Image (cartoon, rainbow, N blue to C red):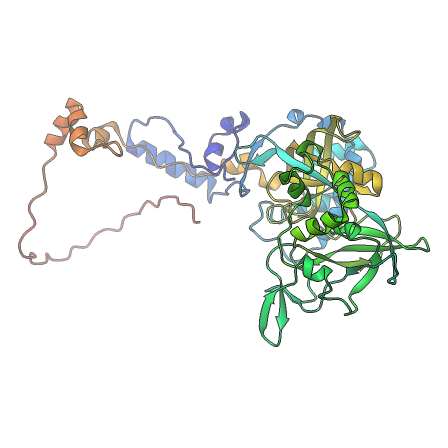
Length: 501
């Protein structure tokens, strides 16, 4: 959020106030005269030139902190984090088209990424110094909140077949050719949110089929099947996670990754079970959902269809032991990659996440203090301090990811070029206060106070001052004859400093 008012005084920033989307007033002290104030104002403008505004994070608040104030920073494995960050730098350095200006970091990661790609770092201490040299830590959260929120995800390993059999009869579909998103070509990467259409005839577009219609065969028999799974539950969990390793009968794998969706918002099936009183909120996890669905096949079908969203996959050529590929296009790193809100954040941004999470057991409070890198996204990941932690592939990773649903602290690493304190020093000063004499001659009426009451409340000095001001003469009945035009020497006009929105 905009922090301009707080950044006018560097001392105030160092004290740690949060930057919010609110306006503030800066008092520059009493001036002995208006001329002195204007001179000070003009001098400040001449010294700083054009203002460079601090970053804005919609819906978020942030406060600069020092490295020694980041709990657990000195005990992390910075070399592992550096390698993950360096992997994200490859597409960033290769990018030709700049990132949209709507995102706070814009293209600012290019500079530290070039340094990371050129650096030869092989130990944790040098990796730590790299981050401290090229970034500044910002405590970040949603406006009005003290912490962020994390969940977990993983890559399921499920059994399947390349052909349909009595056992493997649930199709995994690729993106249909009649699926359209306005503003995107059919061959392009599509957004993971927003309306999706199918074409009827030449021009008519209608909403795409929902989950129930697809499960009932709306797109069957069109050659869209990548492979076949044992159950709709396996497919549902693969769709929720966005990728899966399908283990074939000969021991080989088919790797599938998210490619498109059908346009309906995702409805968490766990929330439905909580709202119906089937599973208590404190016991909710992906394992409990699966257990209930396996034990209640009829109810499982109704529960699935309550979530009208449906995901289509693409097959990716990866080695059996390679990790899933995130939305940034690089393989994810278990324990170091996170999914973030791509509408707010830039892929490759490092976040230090610190708190306690049930990593070792469902009731455990395992210290979690780790530098992670934004490399993925998800339709349910919304907000400035919201992340999905990637834990790897398989049953064990799924067990850990399934119990993640906790508040936790976020520190975003900001490239030095966006230093909010330095930018705050370029901000223009407010207009000078009027002199004491002018203030007495023109007292202000408090907002919402009746004029008569305000007049009775005026101090005697102000009343005398009011009497001393002559009233204007009455307007003449007819316009006077225009006076001869006089020539004036040009004056330099004082421009107010304004922020152009």
